[in-house]
Length: 379
Image (cartoon, rainbow, N blue to C red; front, top):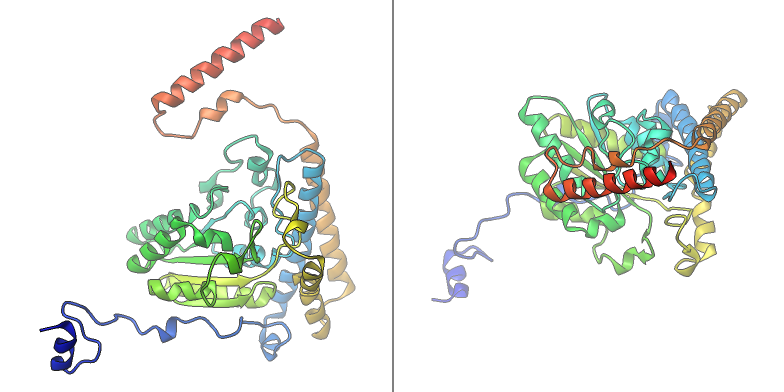
């Protein structure tokens, strides 16, 4: 008897011996047809005025942070800087929705999120300065080290979130990724484990259109990156990544759902990086100026400015306070980065493995001998 005959005799269309029916109705997992928006919609009037003003303030300060870090790179004070200019709403909302005991898992473009989490800018940028593996204590800030390999932080977020739940701790982990990171195997493994384990983790993909120079159309054929959630059995959400209150709302809902035991959520935020991939990139080789200009009209600060003025929530005092705070931060960054740090080259081998490997010990011994010989020559 063929499989087709067996289907016919069971009376169940599509039934295959040994197969199980789908365990989840996919409909509730599908992302919104259009990106979730608050700015420019009736939902804006329902927002907390204090939250709207706070988001505006943080956006202004965040933009100045990006500008100053970019300038420091041009001055040689940073080895490289992947600016998040244009993506500040994603960074700020991500840091703002987390509780004190929650964990943030950033990627290399997310230093603004790390600073917004409370980490000192000098410490947050230490990795990109080339001075240490990481410049801050992850446990103290509940922020994982910044990482340059794509997607590797996603499985770590799942592991920490699952472990916290096993210990009975109401901790949520939020993993930040770019659209390029969704093509990495680590991303898919993380989503599968998170869904099966119902781990309290939220994945925020900042889709800025390009994985370095590769446009999204050359990377994924899915209707949206948020649709990828359905294949793993978790909800997918699509949101305007330059709409700060919309991001805050969608992220808050996902974090609360995870904390309550509802499992993970994949959120795709549609945004754009105004600057090049890094200071070593020539973005004019793969995108046009009219495209960049169009996105400048959808700038997160511009959108918030218009919305707050419409609600009569943006006064001269708030504008001046935000500008003063932004300039104070920039001045502190210039002062701190002006001084050349005193570095111990041997620190390169610390905090890599709990028990150093034979290769690491051999390399450390070789460097120590070279430093000793150099010191002897100088004396």
